[in-house]
Length: 430
Image 1 (cartoon, helix red, strand yellow):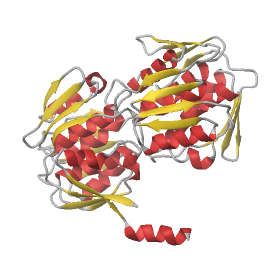
Image 2 (cartoon, helix red, strand yellow; image 1 turned 90 degrees about the horizontal axis):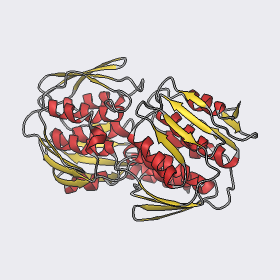
Image 3 (cartoon, helix red, strand yellow; image 1 turned 60 degrees about the horizontal axis):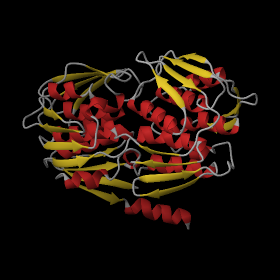
Image 4 (cartoon, one colour; image 1 turned 90 degrees about the vertical axis):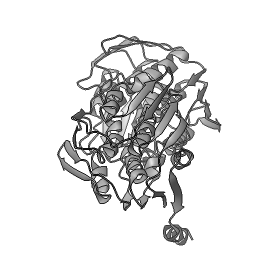
């Protein structure tokens, strides 16, 4: 199994262009089965994207990548289910449910896989789909979903602005009969990007300023081209990489307005920021200051995915920082790994108290999830000595060529293959 080997204490400086957003590309790929064919540009080359393409292939679509563009040709739908191995590759695979039902009138799926961040109940997905005319039965770990009478519009009020539930409702209702209204819908930039994709394919969706989405069903979607928005969490990660190493960076091909909740926090740590239309520069030449209180919230609040990268910066702050996680119950697994590197972090329930230390030291650590794994890389960049970061398959789900890009920015980071594990895999196969 591959790992990263990092020699720390190297300053991150230079310019980096941000790739397309994973969390926008995935629901758009799911929506591609509703179009005869489509071309999705600025689509990152990630393991989660590969998993989505595998699902599309199983469903009977042809996909082809050329550079950062993926072409999807629907063809005839062969299957209306997603096998358990494909579902377990990523948790966001649940977003295919609404699209498959809209296309086939039936879907069979198991529970999704991916990062273990605590319970992510799909009750909101299922109850919302039922309002659109879907009958759902559980069958030994699988969900049999049928819309034999056809999908129809409905008024759906979400008790929580769930991103996944909002996406599934949009995908299921965009070709349903009548009008669907979603109150308290999620309004992340990735949601708006999905809506733009569907509208480019002939859909009729509009968004009101009060988090209400109105979907007028159309008979069918047609072919289109779409450019995926830049990945805001990747942009935040590179900004934090420069800050934690007292560096200087220009992050380009991004949308500063998408990380508006994070920029004041970076300024609070002492970072000097300059915003441009599609770029941000950051410089920090001293030990960071602590942050008083970070509460993760649905967009436009502080994003839960940015919590771990910011925590890496707080481990070296002059004072104590407090984090309160309001989205996921189990999002502090990276904290224990940071402690192995000399950080002082106390976790109690949804609260983490980070007491800054003067220096971190290299250590062997394991990635626990996507963003937690990225935060361990940041700690390793700033630490004295060598760190080995295992289970980087988590990181590969959301960061394209992370070690290559960091190396270009001045980091000493290399990918290493565990020969012992390779030998064991070969013996098992042969």
